[in-house]
Amino acid sequence: MFKIFKKKKKVAVFDAKVAINVLRDLTKLLDELGIPSWLTDGTLLGFYREANFIGHDKDMDIGVFISDFKDELFDKLEENGWKIVRALGSKDQGLELTLRKDLHNIDIFFFYEDDDCYWHAAWQGQKIDGKRYRKMIKYSYHKFQLIKAQFLDSDFNVPLDTEKYIVTKYGKDWRTPVKDWDWAFGPSNAEATDIIVPEIKKRKR
Image (cartoon, rainbow, N blue to C red; front, side, top):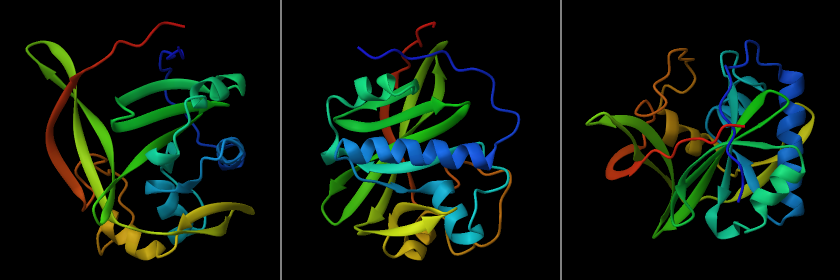
């Protein structure tokens, strides 16, 4: 069973030089496991709009199809120095991982196929009767293909119609930076659900 490490204070400075190495390291590991990944969310927006990480971003985001999930993933991550900060949802429903290496975090959003779309989940913390829960928010995209693209002198996968993907998430005003972004319901494709699960306490290191 993988360990979940207690989350430390946020990194004061997001170092782009370190971040791109961390991002490259993770995508290489996933490739070796036969798990294709692609830039998504804020990392994809930075790639497309600024040809860099977004200046006020504090982590990175990649997408992975749940159909490519491998049972040995968690063991391989830990063997290669990755700390699993949190695991939300499940393989069957809305899996989301936050990983850390060299003081930089990467969120992995697992995408599920549903008729003519792909969707992933994020889990918003809530308190009900004094107890902590997580409520699932669903984000859907029209089906897409992946292509290789260069980002900060490294090759990564991105959606073929990158702008369509970004408009789906950030709306027609995606070119205008928003510093105080509502990660949960700021996205144009955010859909509230009634799926609520108890929050699992993190193990102490």
